[in-house]
Length: 306
Image (tube, rainbow, N blue to C red; front, top):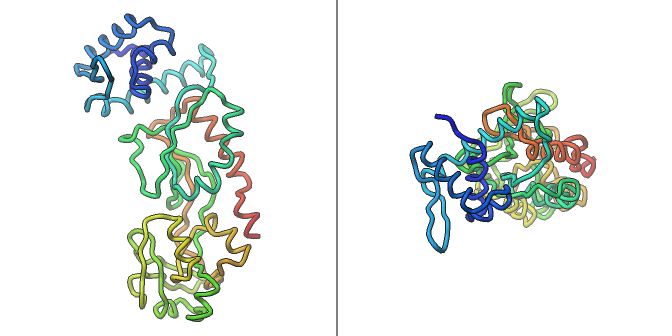
């Protein structure tokens, strides 16, 4: 099955705009040419990719399933042409990016004006959630993920280390006391994130312990990073947080690090990840490079917490 990439580009843009004529105009096609190209693509695929009516255009189920693969085919062609010097790999188009909401609010949103100034032809479609969205099913070009350190075969680039620490508010510690050892945590109110599964702690000297909200005298479970921090600030208990999330609150004295000689044994990393191929479109590459330059080289939370 041979697929004409002009038809694929038109389909991708029409799926974003939900307007075939507007998508065609952006690519320099007359309305009749646009309709013909889409019809030819659908004939090649053997399915209706778009539902058309006199009032609106919508993606069909087959179109939704095919869209991420269409993006991948086009990205591969762009990368190949760029390597061969056949096309100026200018960063253009819409980039779909998913990332944790708390991190994005603190560190990505404030620097976006600078990105748009440098790359005016790139549009960002940001989907911010602490629930991990599927890259392929969601047709995402790029995702920010915090995960256990992986080997070099991982399709993505490391943005920064994701150090996890325990902390509580001064008001909470004044009432309930400050734990001296991991065993003391069993007597405290612990706040867990999502599954509240146990996390192993290790000290600088190699001693081990457990942070286990399920075994605590009282526990609270949340599924949102900002809610985790806010409930900790309010004095609800002791929680495990990423250093990037609480660095400013620690510096200002709103939070206190608990068991400072201990850290989470599981080494997690902030990764910029993209779908399984090694192909990077220009728009993805420039956005990754921008985040690495403004966040990855000198993580702002390290300066705040030092």
